[in-house]
Image (tube, rainbow, N blue to C red; front, side, top):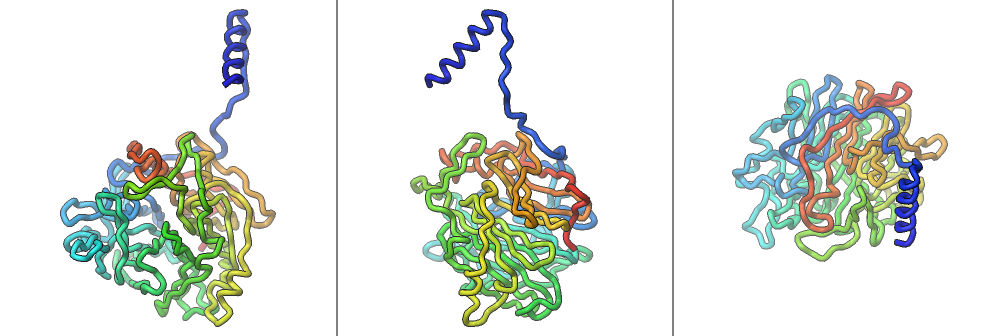
Length: 417
C-alpha cells in the first residue's frame, strides 16, 4: 500500500510539473494473430475436432455444466456439428443425443446416469483420428440441476467411432466398470493406428485420461480391435492433482466447489493428453498442476505381471509449462500446451526440453481443447471455465459467446497422419 501511494504521488507531481512519465507495460499479445473460427451463443463447449474437409465438431459435457444435461425435454445435445459461424446442430443425430427419459436415472438411490449403450450421455471429448474418422468419448456422467455429478453405470462410459463419409457409427467400445469406475471421468483421448503396435490386435490403441475429481486418476488404454481396456499409473503422483492447487486466471482465484460444498483447491487429475508425432511417447498433465509428464507407449501398452511397475518407473517429468487443460501435437513434433494463467498457449520442444510462448492474447482465458488440422492451423476453444459456478465465488460469471479461435502453425506444421 505504501508503494502504491508513493507511485501515485510521483505521478501527480510529475503531472503538475508538466512532465510526461511513461512506465513499461505488458503488451498482452505475442505470436500469430487469432482468427475467429466459431462463436458459441448457445450451449457451453469444451472439445473441438476438425476434419480434413473442414468439418468441425464440438461437444457440450453435462458433466461440467448442468445446462448441458438432457432432461428428457430440454432439447440440448452433447455432440454437435458446427454449421455456420454461430450455429451448431446435434450430431450424428438428435435421437442419439436424447436418451429416453433423459440422461439421469432418478429411480436409483442416489440418482445415477443412465446406461444406454446406443445413446450419448455426457460427452467430454471429440477427436479426429489419422484416418479422418470422428471418435466420441462419452464419460457416462452428468450433473443434476443442483450440481451433483451422478455416478456412471455400465454402458455409459464408451468410445464411439463414426465414419464421416457416411455419418454412420462403425464401432462402439464399452469401457467396463473395472476400468472406468463409477466415479471416473474419461476426459480426453488420442489414437495410434499403426498396425504393428506391441500388445495390440492390429487396429490401433486409444489412450485416455481419467481426470476424476475423486482421485481415481490413471491413463486408460483401449485396444481398438478387441475392445479390451486397462489402466496404468493409477494413483501415482504423475496423474494426480497437486494438493491445495490454486490457479489465478485474469486475476481471479480458482477455488473449486461442487454442489455447494466448501471451497477447496482444484482437485482434477490427469486431463490433457498428446501423442508424440512418432507415436512412441505419450504426454499428459494433471489439470491441478503446472507440470507435464510422459511415458514410453510400449510401457503403457504392456499388460504383463511387471507392467505396472515398469510403467511407473518409466515416467518422465518435463518440468513446468503453465496451467493447462488440453495438449496437442503437430507433425514437427512440437507439443502445444495451454498456459491459462498467462492468457496464452505455450509450446514444448522435446528435442531441447524448452517451453516457450507460442501465442498470447487478452481474449484468451481458459484454453480447453486444441485440435491441429490438415490446413496447418491450431484450433482451440476458449470457454471461460474459470468463470463457471464451480469456481469461486460460486456464481456463473461466463459471458457468451464462447470462442473457437485458430492460429497458423509455425514451420509448416500440420496434423500428424
